[in-house]
Image (cartoon, rainbow, N blue to C red):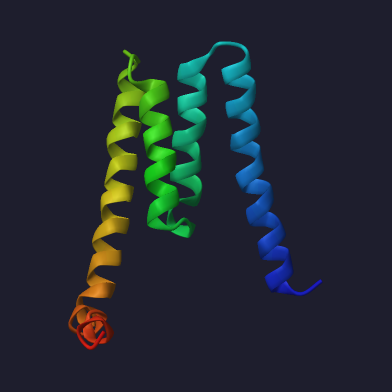
Length: 109
């Protein structure tokens, strides 16, 4: 197996583990635990996720953890929001040079 295939397999395994934890937590009624699983996904895989995935995962974590009174969970939510915002800022900066070109085809229609 080449390195790329191994990395893909590892990434899939990493994504599956927190999701399994989330499903178990939701099934047993531990919504805060399910929220922590979503936060773990962002913490561990956030740099490999696109902005849409990050936003969706963060919204899920926020919804599941909104009633938490645990200071650590609240700090993790804030840290994960920073990951989401950084991702959005990076995406915006990548698109900035392209903005003048985005509407070119539309004007001639």
